[in-house]
Amino acid sequence: MILNDTQIRALAIDAKMIDPFVEKLSTDGVISYGLSSFGYDIRVADEFKIFTNVNSGSVDPKHFTSNEFVDFKGDIAMIPPNSFALGRSVEYMKIPENIMVLAVGKSTYARCGIISNVTPLEPGWEGHITLEISNTTPLPAKIYANEGLVQLLFLKGETPAVTYLMRKGKYQGQRGITLPKV
Image (cartoon, rainbow, N blue to C red; front, side, top):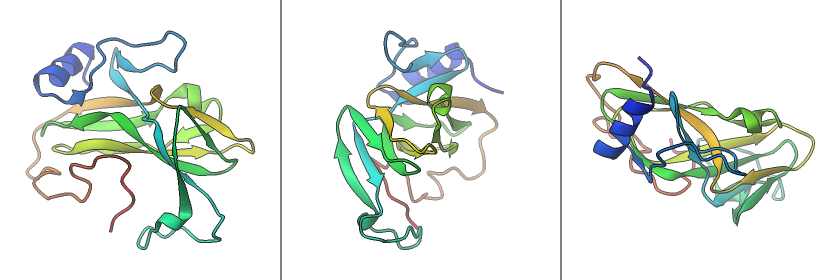
């Protein structure tokens, strides 16, 4: 069952599932964020790791190093053409044991060729969401900090035998942008 705004609000407040929590969709001159009918649009914070090929390296998820990106902090991040960046959510999430969350890219960015990876947030997981952002265009792309980037969809089910917390998942409790781990 997908949760609606009333159910999401109750979990956000009572179970502290989303912090900070924005009670209604903010749309005035910004890419929307906050509570919607069947989801919650989260914001990207003002810190980014933007991939670069300055060091002629390669991306290896088993041996990832900081040589592949530059750190950027600011209101507007520029992602180079056909490149990629990592960001993080403003919101800190605490997912209840009977909830599964899917993070999907917002159509405003998708219509500009900027794609956010579909990411699951498993039952029992908590932390800032590390956001993966691809610029699929041949032009530089702007990402606006503290505005909406992805929408979260909340699915309710029976509590699983083993949650992310129970199995001590490698990304449990992450703060800030978290790089790949094996």
